[in-house]
Amino acid sequence: MNRSSALKFIFLLGLVSLCGDVVYEGARSSIGPFLALLGASAAVVGIATGIGEFLGYSLRLGTGYIADRYKSYWLLTFLGYGLIAAIPFLALTGNWKIAVLLIILERMGKGIRSPARDTLLSHATKEMGSGFTFGLHEALDQIGAFLGPLLMAGAFYLFHSYRLGFASLGVFVFFTLFFLSLAKRHYPMASEQIKKKREKDKEKLPSAFWAYLFFSLFSVLGFVNFQLLSYHFQAQTVVPAGQIPLFYALAMGVDAIIALLTGKLYDHIGLKCLLLLPLMTIGLGIFAFLKDYDLAFGAVIIWGCIMGMQETIMRAAVADLTPLSRRGTAYGLFNTAYGLAFFIGSSTIGFLYSLSHTAIITFVVLAEAMAMFFLWRLLKTH
Image 1 (tube, rainbow, N blue to C red):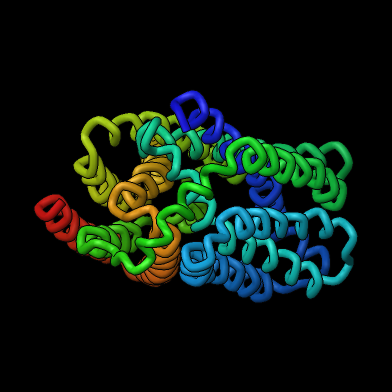
Image 2: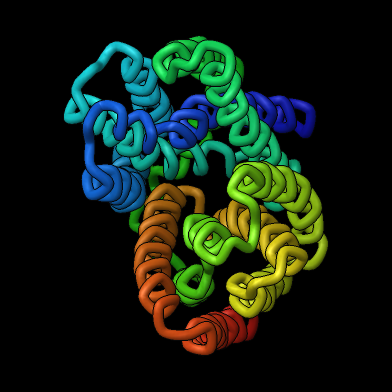
């Protein structure tokens, strides 16, 4: 694969993610009120989304290993993206239990495809650079994350119907699988090259990867999620309710821009670029829960920057620290650690919110101090 082919391959997989994000980010923007209309309680909504996110991350440990063991990168990628077809079927259901099942199936698809897709994508890093590869992919991905909620909002505004919005997402399911088929047809070598590494299957993941895994875990542990941010904005009337979705759209736009910028920065300075993550996460912890509109605006921009870096340079580092024949397993471990840290961190910060802002800052600083310790270990050995 030369540079031109590598760029086309990245772009095709980016279009796959763009269309896929239109579907599931669009759905996620409206799932809560839709389930409420079907008669589901707030507890059901919380449990359903929680189970879905848990499966979306925990499955990656197994699917990453399976992808490496059986060299089934394309198969798992197609299967995972195929499950987003569950979303348009929400338009046909009038039962909240069936709707919850469809929502969970879509999240399971995320867990099935992610390690295999990222391994295929990492095949282009040799020609284009890890940072640029994952940066461009994330930027395209976030365009879809921005357009999906707008599509659902438009459908509801014009027709007062969530069902029509869900049904319209079926068009993007088709384009998701269409672009994925193009990627496989024109660049099957992305998987064939990995198969040539079969003789290295017993190769162990390097010690540097484990130091990086712990860095990632503690870095994400102190990250304040947008749900908590938006809760604070609403509860303390920091931001008018009608502007909160616009703040989220702003964060998605910042995410896309930062993904490209930090991707190129990573290709120039390497793993040292990761130091930005704990430093910005500490800044977010300090400013996130203040009661000033301008500081809230700044916190949202910082949040978008962190998301852009997490989805770009953190994924790029996995590719650079692991052998190709074990990369699916590595991405599975990384994503599982990410999901576990996100769950524990969000739960802890949510609990500390009722105690004091100082308690949140203390937790965030301690978590990010541990992250910087493991980054120091990584830079010292790598």
